[in-house]
Length: 457
Figure 1 (tube, helix red, strand yellow):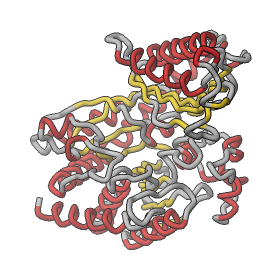
Figure 2: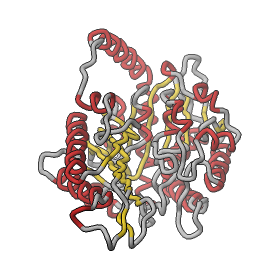
Figure 3: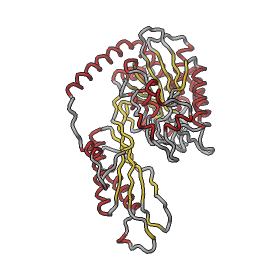
Figure 4: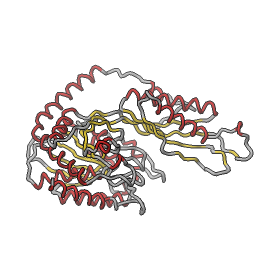
């Protein structure tokens, strides 16, 4: 424990140092492609080099450090998390996973442990999606499922992702070359603060993630008619903001229902040309839906679209509904999770299993590789907030669990490879069976937009 405590103190020191790389002087905010973003990249890459890894920055800004195995047919096991933040963020979200993962690999180097697989530590460039309103930019490139249409997405100032990449001297034509090939993956592991209160309330240092909730993120634009606040009678108004407000309350009511199975958040609203003496003519709000059930997520998506339409029809408001981001619920890999359980039991700890309501880079990676996650206790479950905090003793415990996990993985690597081969064969057989996909109501919504109902993203 003494050694792990020293290691944890080093990680804590680096987390504090990394938090100095901020776009804002009075709080931590670090979004994709800024000066603070580049400063953070440089720090992380220097720490990877100190650990003895071969490093480079890829064309989406991920920092990658690799420890190569001497085994001739070695696959790659990735440990990662993200170094971008939300606005007015906490220090530990993302950073803990990168620096704890790096420490685990540095410990392997220092002890001269020979592994039957390569380990690549990746600091993903953009998971939060703050600047371009699209999550997992970094991990999607590594997984090989980045949509090149994203390059035309623009930030609040009208700058496209492509322009930002060019400004950083990255080559977007080589993004596909930065992916880990599907046949080269052994698996993925992410250490992350829980961002919830379960571990804190039970005073347990760490727990296992068994599943990650799916998400739908929308932008909804309400258009009415702007007018003079003093001269247009109340019953003759088409107030865009009032329509948006009624919809926001309807979202809360829907998600609060006992059997909804979703959480819903409107975290952003903007009024175009807003003024105290002008009836709002245009208002835009966000909508974030999450659920561990794909069926319930789809039902909520469709139901809230209908509710929005009814409100706007009643108020004679035109609206456009744009789906910006979508991920399905993810189940963490059974074999890797089993090894993680053993690693916790080696510490004589209670095994806590949880579903994550927050999205993680593991979501993007799960499309091409088996994934696993370890949650670490954080103060009162607070996250996306400057009060975010993880104790050194809990970081130390996470390191010991992770050391055990890599040891377990090393002894079972050949079994995992065979299991992957068997799963792929089963997937291929199922693909032959499912050649005719069913058309859901959501597909109809997205493929047949019409005025007042929905617009394409």
